[in-house]
Length: 589
Image 1 (cartoon, helix red, strand yellow):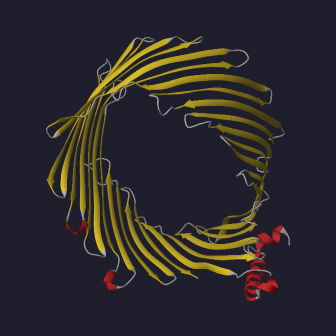
Image 2 (cartoon, one colour; image 1 turned 180 degrees about the vertical axis):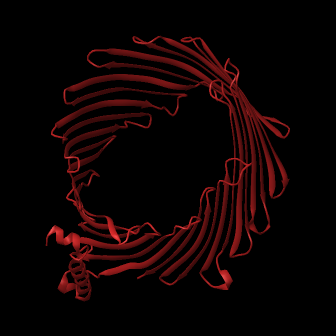
């Protein structure tokens, strides 16, 4: 069999293999278990057909016919504890035609075989092999006689092998081999081969997870070859409920070689990282402390260019719950970046506080206020030192009204004033914001319910820029069963946003969207005949026509192992109108 013959006869070479496979499966299922050494063969699958027709107001129709089939086989060898296998075959043929333009025919075949040896033992083995073959033919319909415009085909093969070792103590070891090959009809190939190992050690108060892999990738399209080595080790140490130490070490090496127009280029990347973080969270103390260190280095080389950088950093922070209302926090951090020619040192210190009052009950109202404050300092040998003082003060007011036994109103109001003083550029930022929301929730007869919410907000910059923003948002949803088998639901959203800027032009955006949905589980009294009608509208500016209009009517009918669906959809995007007819039927076995 030559490649040229295979190109001219797509899938012809697959037919004897598929036929032989199905025949062997049938024969295996008909033989006695003792004679074949194979357990009962369980077959399942489906076959289906779909038709989609898309037309526009400009008269250019697109029609797609799709035939698909799936076959699944499951069995075991000798005994279920010895080996379990499965096979899945899928085939799809799609023929699409654009009126007056082109016709496209696509064929896709995939096969996936899985074998699990000793699945319930301490040495389970896994094998999976996946193959796919695709061919696409495009035919131009704009010329007479009809001529091929393009044709392409490609196939993919992937083999995965995994051998695991499980110990009585809960440790796990695994070896892995993964090979993927992709080949196109014009001879282009892509090969990716990976070897890897993994160890998961679960010791007393310790857990160590190590992973190592080496990957080689060859790309004939770019004439490129890449080798990649990765080592990753994680260590978790938990001596008791209060202490925890998480450490990480990894290495990455990449070596890439490519051949361009008579020029051979190569590049390398070497990276390493070591980090460790400690957490102390005592249950009987009102504070928590955490800190860590990190070392990271990266070296790159491409042609005559090379660079190197080492980064060292550390941090220490904590929280202190002084009372149930008052909490303090603080942190320190420092870093050093060394590029060989330049060294950059940075540090930051911060201390802050949060006070949150109790909830006060003022007749039917609830009230609460809160305040925050923080002082931070940033230093650097390459930049100007900066000190920042920030504070905020806010309060909330809420009330609930129980209108009836099945409905209530909730009102929420809030105000927040925040500011920050930066000594670096002497900039003073102040922001005042107000917000309010009104929510109505009701339960209706027959199991229906409604929810409506109105939200308003206003934010203003009190500094020299005088920027401000106002937002209006209204949402309403309603769900109402009409009978035991039918119901209707709907939603509406309105939003208006106004923004005044100091530099860019002011803007105003208004949008609206709505949806109405009706469903019936037994249309015309026919069991399992379901109907759905869904209408959706959206608009960015209310003064014009709707930007998008969608209306779908769908029928589904399921009998035994047969599923069918018919759908008619109307889509109007403003500039173009689409009509989509979709029919599909699937038979399972």
